Length: 70
Image 1 (cartoon, rainbow, N blue to C red):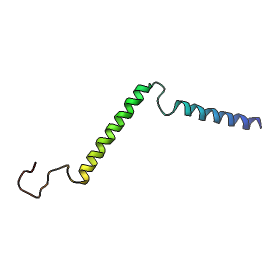
Image 2 (image 1 turned 30 degrees about the horizontal axis):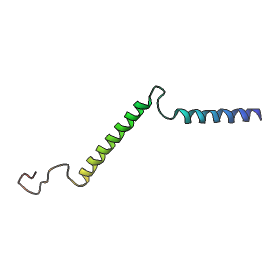
Image 3 (image 1 turned 90 degrees about the horizontal axis):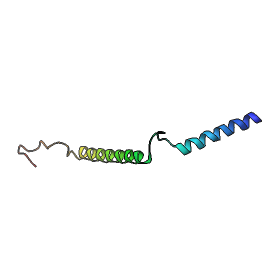
């Protein structure tokens, strides 16, 4: 019974520790995490724009006319 309590207590301690520290690095400050999230958001937004250009075929000029269309 004491072993069961010790195992449960250690599991609870691990859960609390992971919850407190999160998935960030131990040496990462709040400002660094904020910059990282902003960079990820900027990259994802740019990628969505590139994907939409590809879907609507706006990523390259049309070959339907011999004249240059701008």
